[in-house]
Image (cartoon, rainbow, N blue to C red; front, side):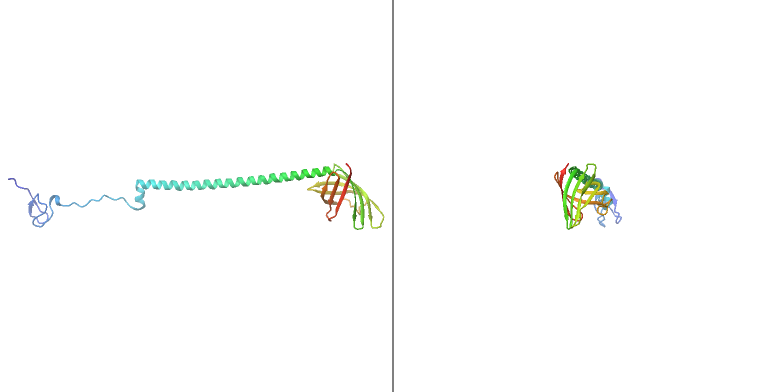
Length: 223
């Protein structure tokens, strides 16, 4: 009958069967019964570095970077477009304002030209200012000159003949006259300029108001 091989117990030195799982003398585990230490799979590093070293971590990090870059780029693009929009609107408003001013000036100029056309001709009228009475005939020419003549009486005094000539122009519905010649410089000084508001100017009637607030009416007698 074959004999079972013996092995020496590392615990007490006793010889025991190779098939024994423990030494009968000291109980020391033998052979395959000796448990090997548990081997746990090595864990990857934790924290941010562990997150970044994982494939999923790289993908997430890359996605966050792309979102951040895209967000900043989108913000800059929005700011750029908003600035361009504001500048465009400012230019359009300025252009509209300029067009409006040009149109208003053109309309005013056209109105003044029409009034100037109507004024050309001979007009006559009589005026009474307190104790002063006056009769006047004035001729306005298309070349911007005028000639006026009439009579003037103050109270019960004698009549005085008055004559003057000068230039005229209409601007913004106001007529400005400048005396260049006068037979009575004391009453009508040469170089004197007067501006009056045009209240009515038709083919038959010319009504104006002086700076002193007096209103005068002239009637057309000839073109």
